[in-house]
Image (cartoon, rainbow, N blue to C red; front, side, top):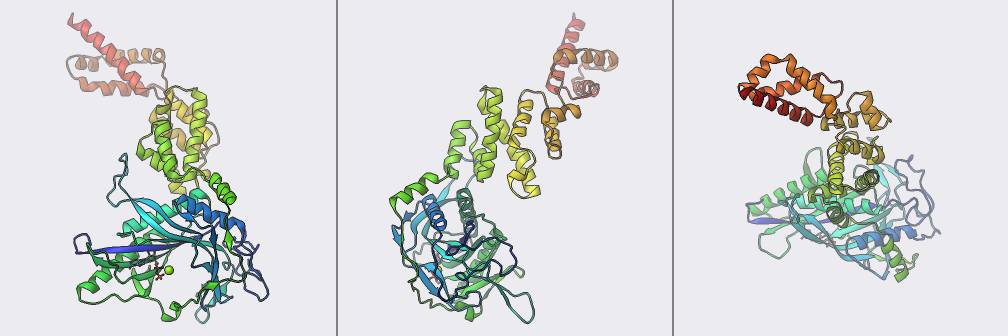
Length: 503
Ligand code: ADP
Ligand code: MG
């Protein structure tokens, strides 16, 4: 692709299931994984005579996302009916927004493909958001039996935000990072859990090809059914390749809706029946227009958490962290909270001192140990058995040189299966470092006395033996003395001997 005369143009339509307890227009539960057809009610089943009422939380979540993406918020927006016939849609129409979405003209920033993440200001690119609108989800068809399709209506009426991007993306990698950015935002805002496997975050990818330098858009195809970041990337790479080949062999791209077949690693056309395109949108007469007052806007604005970019900048400014550390620690809101909770405890214990060194020490532990465990065991950071307070205790011991770096790692490992505090664990496992020179000195003397031949060799120039002496000293301790102290003591003593010998 890089060397062909073509470039890809990509726009994504992302659906986020909102984390509200109730559905968008009725009080029924939205819980995922319930027995099929148990979270249903007359409104979401579209029974005649029922009336939908907008869940206020859905509106505040939509505004949250709009504000976080620099969107304009519509003072007045309208729900519309989008008609199509499908078994998972009992009303025969989906309540959505059409002419007037609740948010429009926003943007997010993503890293460019070749951006250096550790740079002070990694190269980013703005991706426009055409619109964000509220709508209800449809039910789910289960094609798991040879002769039948079964329908689960639990998902009917689950609130969704649809986020539509401008065709500003150019590569599968950019599309992936855009998705990741959207997921990061919805999770920071607490409006969606971002779980792609469970379908809380879903993506349809639109893609076309054009000659580099051209400003016109080519004919696009739309790939549906992308339920992981990897699928988004793979499906786009496949589709771009397919379209380029078509153009190169004098063919034309047909505008169509495709499905990504993850097992075969290819896209294929959807059955045309599933593609009925005249939705006959019209304003839903059952719902009043949504009017957003200044008071509501202010209320939502004031409830916004600190967003990732601002937090990253603050971590650099306040704690003196490298940009890379700050980016990793603020990637997820809960990780940033964990980090700061740990720092708070540590700062209290140290009562100041070199806060930058302390911040970096905690950062190292979180990035190498805590995030590793999180990755291995899955779940959230709250499931990692080392809470911020105990991590702070551990880092405190390390900063005071009471634990060597390898001993600190061992203690951390032990803390995963023990609720004891790190000091107790270190004592139990004899990992506490003997930092007292007075304790080490007699042992150094003894080692030198007991290894006369080696001392002689050392004095005649075989300085590589220093490591041997260090090893001998370390072995005679139960715990591990600080090798730096041992080394210094040995060097001093041997130097004194050398000087004595040459006199
Ligand atoms: P449709 O009417 O087919 O739904 P829209 O204009 O609503 O198309 O756009 C849907 C998505 O497709 C948007 O994310 C938009 O950025 C993207 N898109 C539109 N035209 C193109 C194109 N020619 N190539 C790639 N993406 C496109
Ligand atoms: Mg569309």
